Image (cartoon, rainbow, N blue to C red; front, side):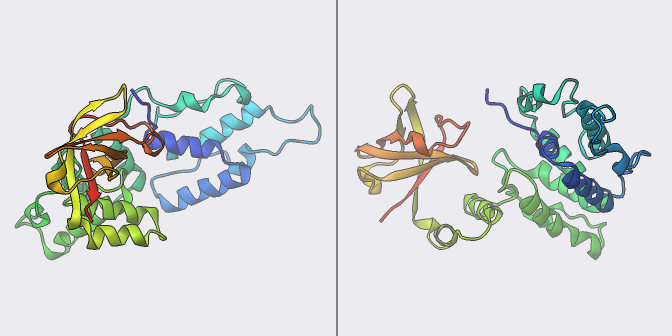
Length: 287
């Protein structure tokens, strides 16, 4: 099973890589943005003492690292990071990786705790998350979430809650109504410079040919797809394989039959920690 970092563990790794000045700025920023956090009684400047020129008076590196972790502890989910108990050179970042990925509810709860939303907005975010299907899509109209008891101000929080899910929570693409919107949301997260990809998704998505992985021979890296000559598939066509909104890899068609084709997996274009399995979706552009 592939190991993945939880949201809190990603934060702890990021914090452990900061130098003293950057850590001071990070702690100050968190304290100012989150009213629920409080600074320890020991001042940051006292805890992170610069080494003295006299070797006999310099605090041990381990003491400084323990002081760092004590000060940043409120920003991390309790129990989800490794407190160093040995010398810095013995600390292996891989020890921070969980043996199993957290379930969906746990991952969402960790992220919501970090963002510290106002109660009314948080409740609506949680409600929408509970309505997502196994692909992460919201297939029900947002209006169905509203109740007659809500006033106009509360009703306006529903679109805001959906935008928060689409723009802030991981994985990217959640809250979309279909695959086209899901891919569009993922491109938005990646920033600018993707004009060609955005054009394909927004203007030419309907011209994409969609298929399913019918079978796979992992020993020879061959998959069988549910699209063939009748669908205008030709040798050399390249299909993108995905599941829900998760990209898995690409395959190139080698043999075409009336209603199916066989394609070879392009190893260099496979997503890290992903494998193609029966039932995955595949798409290509039909010219």
